[in-house]
Amino acid sequence: MAVKDRDRFSTATRLKLLGEQTAARVYRSQTKRQARRSRLTGRAALLALVLCSLIVALAYPMRQYVSQRAEIADQQRQQEQARKRVEQLRDLKARWQDDAYAEQQIRRRLHYVMPGETGYVVIDPGAAKQSRAELGAAHRPWYANVWDGVDKSDASDQ
Image (cartoon, rainbow, N blue to C red):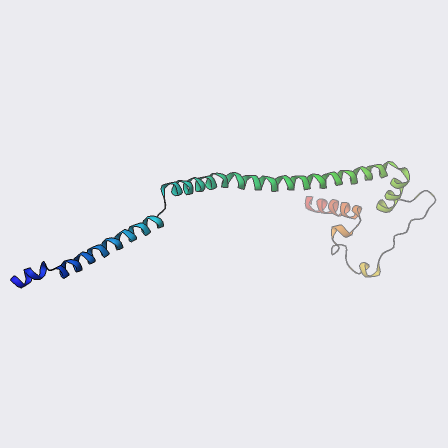
């Protein structure tokens, strides 16, 4: 035991122990410094929180703004189309005020003829082969559709 006690208090042993303790302290202090540097500071955390809050707070209003701008653009496009349609209808109304245009349309659409004229209806030979029922309502004269409606209503009463 005396050798152990003596060895424990020897200068070399004490220096070795002192060097190990010092090295451990230096290592711990470097680790703490690195940990402090890598950790987020309180100000940086607060700044990040404020920025995230602003982004979240502005997200919904920005989405609404973008959608409203798109809706405004769509409404303006529809307004422009309606304006063009109004112009077309005004032009058509002005044409119908002209007696020559009205007479031309009446003659073409209703197959009217002036007194002393002979009216002719030319039928396409290919179309004559099809029955009247096979022809769509859009491809027949309007009066044929009216008479078909009258015939159908008479047939349903009996």
